[in-house]
Structure formats: structure tokens, C-alpha cells
Image 1 (cartoon, rainbow, N blue to C red):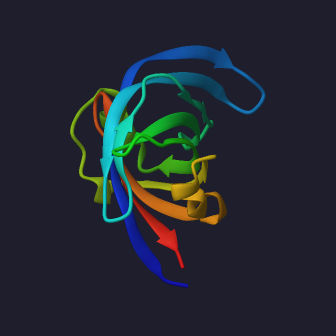
Image 2: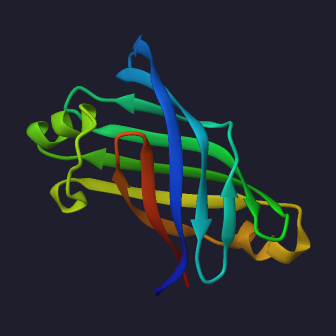
Image 3: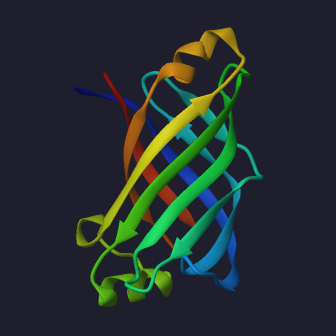
Length: 149
């Protein structure tokens, strides 16, 4: 397998809604406020709406589960889902929770990306798997996505 650059994503977030403890962990919902993406094969805007329905586990690991909509530079609409994991030393996770800038090398944040569209120009995405390396900022997530070839 090889990795081919797809796009760099900047996803802006609204404040988190804490739904409390479940039997999987503490459930939180983080709404998607907007953003952008740009790369060699894909560029455009992240549309408001959608969210990350994440679970914070007892050891501090966060299971990521996002669903939201993209509009490409040429008007196509894409549905994207990401699933992934974020974890690190407790002191690093505490700094992230406080909204501090933290070097992404100090924690693990990886995503698996799937796309869905009816637009013929982007049908190739319906049968494409992508992975990403991500970083959390105070009110955004940034990630570089790569197609598995």
C-alpha cells in the first residue's frame, strides 16, 4: 500500500455538549461549525452541521465518530465520516482539554475517512479509503488525509 495526499482539512468546532456517562464512557457531542479543505485532488468548504459523537474512556482515550458535509470548489456535495482514536499522557490530554496549543507529536490522533457522493465527478471517492493524522486546537481540528492506494 501507498499513501497519496488527498487534502488538508481545517474543521471549526462549536463548544462541546457533555451528555454524561454511558456504559462505554463519557459521551460528548462536538458540533461542526464550518471550515475548509485543500489538496491536490480535493478542495472546498466544510459546511456547518454534523458533529463528532465522541466517547471519552476511563483511561482518557477518545473514540472519534464524525459525520458532516463538504462542498467542493466546483459545487459537489460530499458526505464524510471519520472514525479514529486520540490518546496520550494524562498531562498532555489535560492541556488539550484546557484549549492549550500542544505539539501533535506529544499525542496520538489518527483517523479513518470514508466518503459518499452522488456527483459523478467524485464517484471515485465512494470506493476510496483514506487515513489521516490529526491535531486538536482550542476550537478546531486539523488533519492531513491520504488515500490508500
